[in-house]
Length: 100
Image (tube, rainbow, N blue to C red; front, side, top):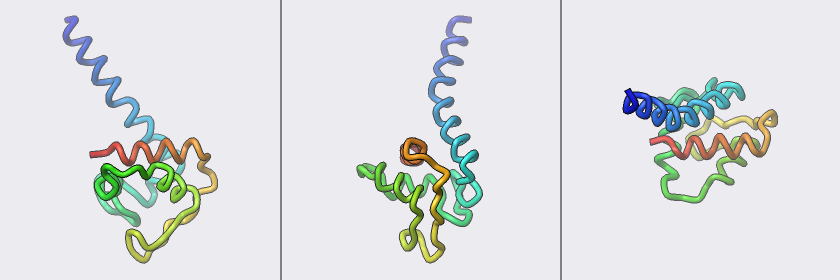
């Protein structure tokens, strides 16, 4: 019984932060154009994580979230997201880069 509870607790500790950040992405309307595993309008978040793996780009991606951008993933621009705070943009960028 103790093993089962420990395994459940450990799973919650690992999964909860990822779900919390996905919830933030949904709340801030990021999921209207992005999905975790497949391209929608913008790239899949896992593709972004793969492209920038091993690079120190959290600040760069957080800025893209807030300011928008174009050209990196094709001709369709990403609009600016002024409703996202600096801390939220950093949290979202960190989450995206953590996806495998």
